[in-house]
Length: 252
Image 1 (tube, rainbow, N blue to C red):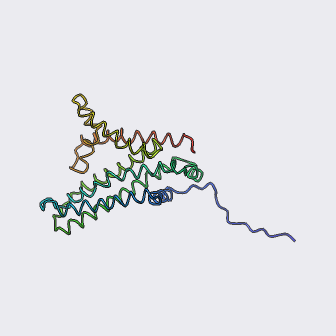
Image 2: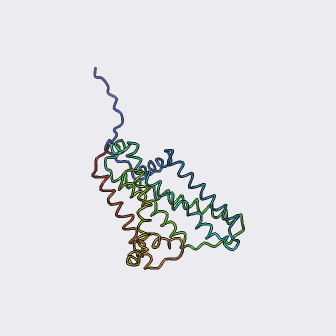
């Protein structure tokens, strides 16, 4: 008599998880850690506090949806990039990189998922800021004016800030140096660009000048060119270095 053999359904061990699934995993990583949770909570609280204070102490003629929205974007624009930095560097500071890359050997896909998760979170932050601004405008009975260009350009501003955070995190792979240099290098360049002989270069490489119009006015072709040049230096270059380090470097 032959013995029947029960065979479990075959499962392709080499099947790769999809980018959507990896992105969801990376989104969870942003909130599963205490630092990520408190950073996001602090960002939301500061956004709400800024709108409340503006509603109380701001001039009545400034109570427009545009002004509320611009103010609500301040906290996410400053703090959200830190979330992007921690998303990458936590793999090394908490020594989970080896496990992550064992599950997903193609390291570049992990980094692409982190970038996608950062963009998704930036869009969510933009929506929350808009919702808080709408509430503030409704409470004070302000003017319901918000140009369409401001929504689009603000989305680009917040998203590129998040991606820049991921880029610096990938380039340095350590949270403290990445956070310090993310804020210190552009600030140092802004200080140097105050000298007259750097005035021309500053228009193209100083983010405080070339990127600020994203949330202030409808940008011209020249302004877009300057913003693109700045992002190429402060976002794309660190990201390329980060890709090289993560895909070619060792993992501990």
